Image 1: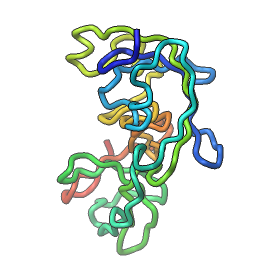
Image 2: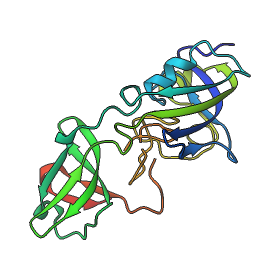
Image 3: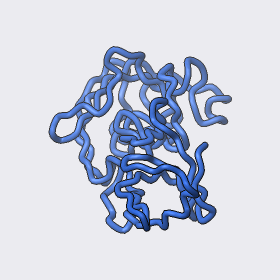
Image 4: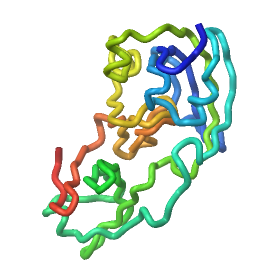
Length: 211
């Protein structure tokens, strides 16, 4: 069976930046199992996987525009310190902001007495990615998996037990990393929350609080 829309795909991958630094990999872990076309991959990787078959291996460069997007300076903003309601805030902390466009992870880049500067760009915004991928298996999704929009069994994404949030994995849009490679993703994806990182919730104009 070939990879098609809403098929269940099992694959191994390694994703690196242009300098060759490995950002994520299934090496030494279970392969990734996901529902193709359901938003778990960055667009460039998802497109390249269509019509692939079990046993196919390939390398792929994905430009930033087809990964986490370009870096936008306007997404770096100074927020009044009182919105954090007495919380201890340090450079590198990540919060989830409640915006008009929904929940958006933001990273603290500077703290002063008057304001907190935050960056709402994805940590991999503006970064070109290099993937090495091997397709291990392809099967039809069950009706329940299609209805729920994800693969069942073995933890999220086939046993990695990552918190994929709303946006995907393996070069996709759904691992909330806190400092994240990915407010969006793992394996070059978009957004998992590392347990060792403190998780906070920013409540729009109402201030910020811990989860």
